[in-house]
Length: 174
Image (cartoon, rainbow, N blue to C red; front, side, top):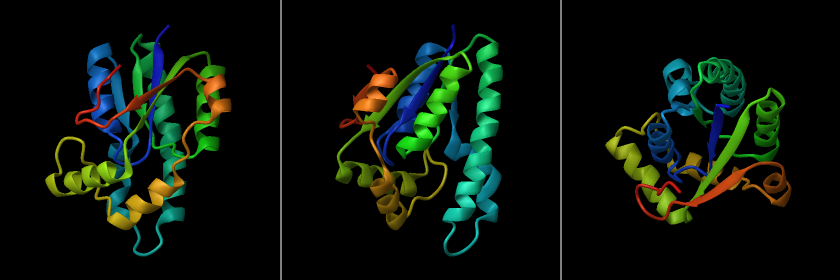
């Protein structure tokens, strides 16, 4: 059975780098939500409080990505999803959906110290290299970091979760 690899963690944890390497190693397809989001919606981003605007589009994009993922899985390839499900409730609902629809799931949860993550994001903003999708200003980094909810014991009991420390660059795949 083909597998869904869900890569999650706080902003700057190394998810894009990890996901790219993982997809290469397993012959899977990496689907990063931020990349799709930036291409589809960034030109239309409103000024000021864009959070409600972002949430509506993210929910629609998650549906599209999942439909696309099912087609890839049906073609006998694994998918590596990098979806930014930083809060537990939506993450668990998405994981349950994957399993309920008959697919195998492995979640990879990445983390690194706050200061290292902040430095990575600032460097990515400046260099705009291969993992760059959109600018993440300091205040958005802070908001997203505070919203991150790591899996608790209930989530760990329900799902196959691999915890990965990304204190080095690039993060090691275990």
